Length: 195
Image 1 (cartoon, rainbow, N blue to C red):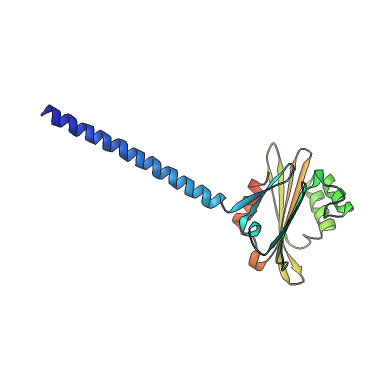
Image 2 (image 1 turned 120 degrees about the vertical axis):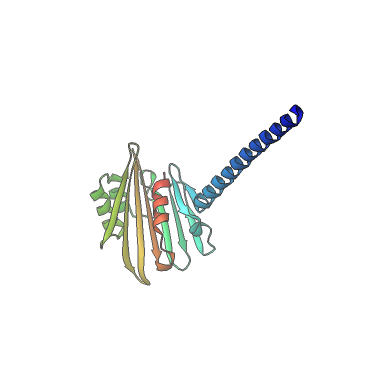
């Protein structure tokens, strides 16, 4: 009788451990799935001091053309339906895609109004209704701007990030037609994970 009771307790104990192991395994699988689903949608473009988080649909598209140096990158569609341009302003020189005066103005910009003025005068965007915001942390500040701009082929969504961390300044300009417009989730991810 004692032996049967002891075996029964051992079996129940083994089943409890097994069910705990199964629960842990399912938790790990669920977390891995959630992480790869969310973060698997983005790629990082590594410049000399910044890693820009870009939606993979633009990075891996066959219709995309890419250009990259140590300090800047450009991703654009062959049909000019979207463009993403990023530049480390603090390390950029006259060989950048921006003209010298715009580069100088944006390099010296430190406040929200200076940045907005530099973008309006130099890049030519953000003259209409602009939605703005910022993330201010002890180690960095990120300003972001969003507007609809008129283009040759219709309206374009313009989304601009301006990242400041000490002497480092980085700007990213996204210009998308209606079909390729960034979602609010994509904009938020790009703001939070570009560093």
